[in-house]
Length: 339
Image 1 (cartoon, rainbow, N blue to C red):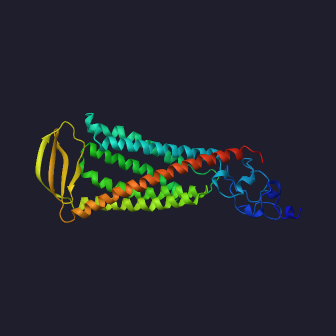
Image 2 (image 1 turned 180 degrees about the horizontal axis):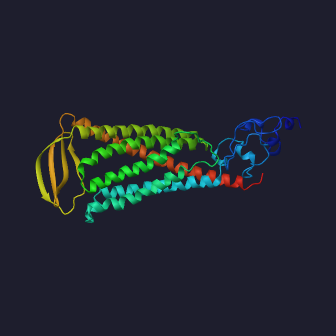
Image 3 (image 1 turned 90 degrees about the vertical axis):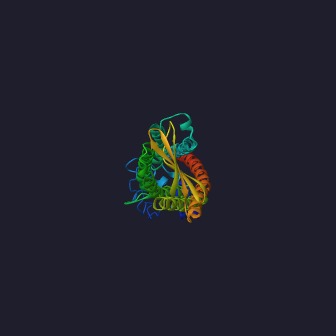
């Protein structure tokens, strides 16, 4: 009986110790701080702890135990989990299409180069939809603030990255060679901002599970991928500012020409392939100079970063997807209760 006398009205009803509550209550058992309703975001200050939200009739008690996802609106959590499904399918599709393009499968199919973007770009909408869904704002307003946030930034950088990628794809397909490298450079800059925003947001969700280990993983992968993109930008800028001197030009006929590409034969030699017009291809070879080894090393380092931390990122995506599904199930069970 003495223990019960020291509990707040809500704690008496639910046997929740006072120290477990995330917000203070006054002597009358009313919320003594700004506290958004978990369903509609209404400020619950002054409401009885065992009462309901005046706006949507959601029990006040659901907002008193912190901002953990298992207490959030289950419909919102299901939207986030659906977004992760779209993102993961986007990864699968991206690997497949990247293999088709990089492996020259489209060329073997005698597919006109100017049609490739029309096949590849629509598939890029899959992860774009996923990121839009997973950045749906929490209806309670938890984690929201005025100005720039990771969630809002993703909704800017993801469409922007898609648009820049589209320009890059069409410039390659239509042989606007002068645009290929500068647009790729711009895409890299946008990519850095996007990685910072996406993994910061993923870490914020992990902390609301809560899963500190997952949160640390998101932070580690974020900085590793940023470092990798910086290496790639250095490599691309180096290519633009210090192009190799090409000689020994040779022209041959070819029914299909996709775009310009550079193939490194050795640290000191490169071969460039580009359209010669009227179905011809120009093969040029030349030296990279003393900096060739360093240039190749930067490219290799970026490839290693991409492989290792790309796989780690996919593992984190699967873990977050599972955690969101579990949180949605817990929230659904909690919200089905009248208490």
